[in-house]
Image (cartoon, rainbow, N blue to C red; front, side, top):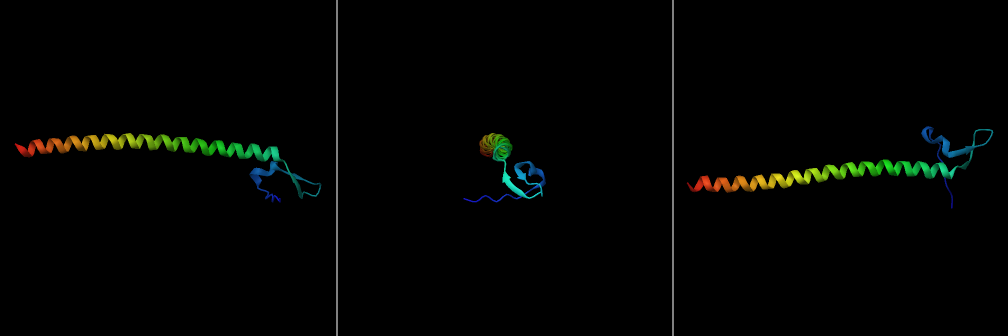
Length: 80
């Protein structure tokens, strides 16, 4: 198994450098913490999207109920 480490400025703390500045190792505990942090951020986004979807579904149910009432009223008015 090979792992390729790409140095990124915001994730520079996840690799270990030698005296010449070359990468020679990975701090796996830092990588795990970084991945967990990113997972938590994405999970929060998913939860927010789920709340929006639920609110839209409730609004859609309200719309369907109002449309049904309007149709019933139109039938009453049309029959008079």
